[in-house]
Structure formats: C-alpha cells, structure tokens
Length: 97
Ligand SMILES: *[C@@H]1O[C@H](CO)[C@@H](O)[C@H](O)[C@H]1NC(C)=O
Image (cartoon, rainbow, N blue to C red; front, top):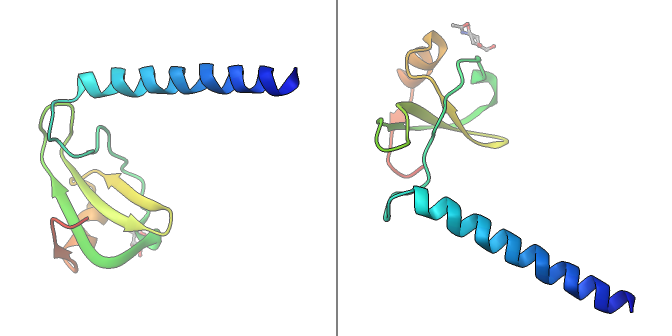
C-alpha cells in the first residue's frame, strides 16, 4: 500500500518535472547555452577563483554580464561595476567558462 502510494507520487513528480523542463525549453531558442539573465553588483571579488573570466553579451533573454568562477559555482556580475573592472583588468578573458 505505502509502496504503491510512493510510486504513484514519484510518477506524478517526474511528470511534473518533465513538463516544467519542456516548458522552459520552449522559451529558449535552440542551440543557446545557458546564460546570465540577471547580474549582481555586489563585490564578491573575495570569492572569485582562478584568473579567467567570460564576457557575455545581451542576446535573447540573456543580459550583458561578466561570468566569474567562485567557490560556490559561476557568478553573473555587472560589467559596469567598479570592482568587476578592477578584477577583469588582472584576469584573462576566455570562452571556456
Ligand atoms: C572589492 O572587494 C575587495 C576584497 O574585499 C577589495 O579589495 C576591493 O577594494 C573592493 N573593490 C571595490 C571597488 O569596492
């Protein structure tokens, strides 16, 4: 009884997740990698790791952004922020982030 309930729950959950992800995909044109849709201006330079950054231009739902690696994953930040300009001046631009 409880196993049956659990499997029905899981089935409903996976159907729900599937329909959600396909709904998201419809909004995003094909062959566009995930991108920053918003940026932060907060100075997180202390969390930035490595010496590479990526510049993203505004396109479709993506906004102009600098992408840094941090210990918590990728961060989308405002290219106009002063701390971002100071940091990128010392770093190497790459497309591999
Ligand atoms: C950003 O934070 C770093 C590290 O705390 C600091 O050295 C730097 O001066 C800050 N930059 C600005 C523009 O506030």
